[in-house]
Image (cartoon, rainbow over all chains, first blue to last red; front, side, top):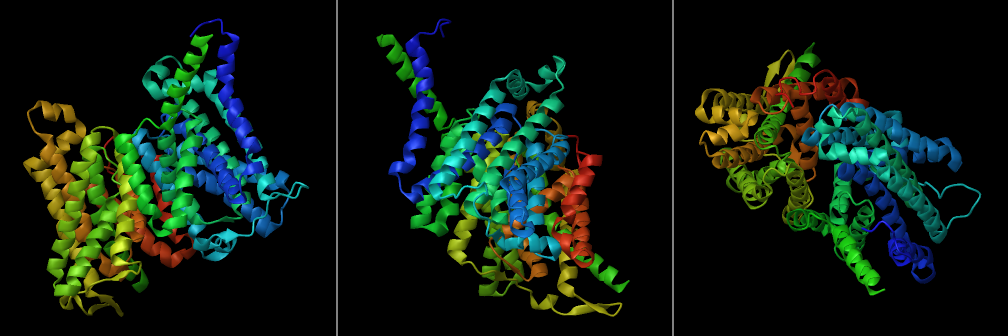
Length: 329
Length: 286
């Protein structure tokens, strides 16, 4: 890398963001409603998987209960709107996100007592705790969450605007861009680099005087925060949430997205989410009852043969293209 | 008082079933470092195969053996064809087993259909024994007895035999055991197959407690078994037994006294124990 960047090189550096941004912004003008709706879902899950990537790819924490934090936010916002008539977006959304952050604070304290595979085991069990809580159909709790059936009837956010599929897509896109770049800046800040240091060699970081526990804890809470944002966006988008979206299977699906996209690449998470949700959508058209089989086979195949992820190829391709482009001048 | 005794017996019999699942999980995790997520569905696979054989032949013993063999074979294939290639890549191994959870459960759904399979109770386990005015079914006692026998057998294997000594040693230091000229590959395969077979055979025995089993039960049982491993501690027969009995009894009493919280009381217990002893009640140091 040269110190003096030419104009052309800078162009190549920012070109992908501009192209993808233009594509995403203009898309609803020529794509159908079904596709726009699918893309909204991809962006929401992309954000969720990016938050997971902060933990897995950058900090080296194998969190297997990430869907639970998402679910905490989605359930909180949904329950406030449907059962308590707190319809204002400015109250219900922050409440949902705060609950997710609170859950992350609690889970972090418990799970960070262990590391590596035992961390995975404990986050898995904690995620299951959330699943079981929302899955209970007895008592007042069951009335609120709807038990194993989940509950529906969550409208688009109340902001004095009338949302349609397309305008909600723009709403989600705005959140996605803001949160995506926030994550990008967090990961490229000194804090983000310390997280990567912890991933590579925690003992060394501790010897250098870092309080690694605190760094990991903060990373866990940040991931919970963005998972909460995704949860709130999702419950408004889908209008419906059930325990299935919270449990073990959902968390694993996020992992599949992350690995296909590429660990530790941030934007790869969105590619993974697009691949998997696209696959789910089309398998839903042809053989909905075989989707778990396809998903499981994907997981095995990706782990056995394609651990690097798609993003690796995309960046390599882009590097080649840009070096070719700048060499020409 | 009577309800306490009955609940205690129910809890112990459920705990014994949990022990049959969790001991395999704990053995595989302790020895090979693999969180074997496919364990729950292998449990159901063995149950389905065994119950089908029981319908055909009417023989309980044959059903248990079939369940154990089929599950052990499935474990063997997964270990040899996939997990072996990911040696020491712990995260990747977990994710592969996660993929297999969905593959096998969907195949079970495809082959056997969506309805639950009814349990097979052999004629010699029919009837019940009166205890303080209550009638407690014999087959529950049978489950407890079989589980106790297996627990003693496993403890003997772990603590009194040479193989057990190798297993305990390699949980502490694999490289050193390998360096002493002991080939660990057959030990690993054996542990994986034994764990899977225990789950499969255990399902045919233990399904009498539930009355029926369906393909989606695998996931639930797996997650309970994971909680057992966390509570009891990974890597020993005693740990799995203590964790399983504790969860079985807590679950049984929870369903009677706090029905709303029944499903998650055990997770609360797990959290409390984790806060006090991160490595579980009888676990090795993490």
